[in-house]
Image 1 (cartoon, rainbow, N blue to C red):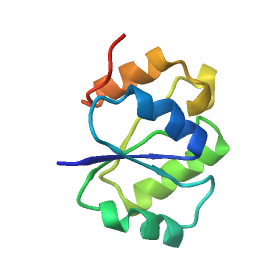
Image 2: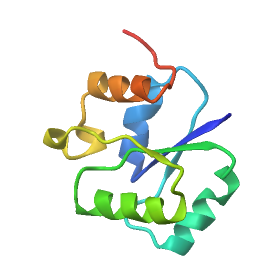
Image 3: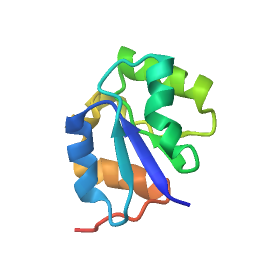
Image 4: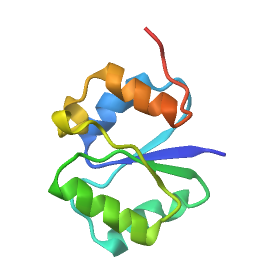
Length: 108
C-alpha cells in the first residue's frame, strides 16, 4: 500500500522528505484548513495509508481533531512537546518516529 504523510507547511515537508528512503507523498495543508478543503486535498489519496505529523500547538491539535473526524483511519505521529514544530524537530527524532511508523528511512 502506498503511503502519504500530511503536514502543515512546506518547511515541515522539507524537513521530512530527505529522511525517507521510500516513495511517500507528502501533502501540505498550508496551516489551518476547512473540512471541505481537507477532503479536496486528500480525496486522491484515500486508498493510501495516511499518516499525519503536525506541530504540537493549537493549530496542530485542531488539524488532528479534523483528521480524526474525516479520516479516522489516519495514524498520527506526535513530535515531543519540547520541539513544538515539526520543522524545528531534530532529524534524529523524526527518523525514530518514522521508523516506529514502519517507514523506510535513510540512516546516517
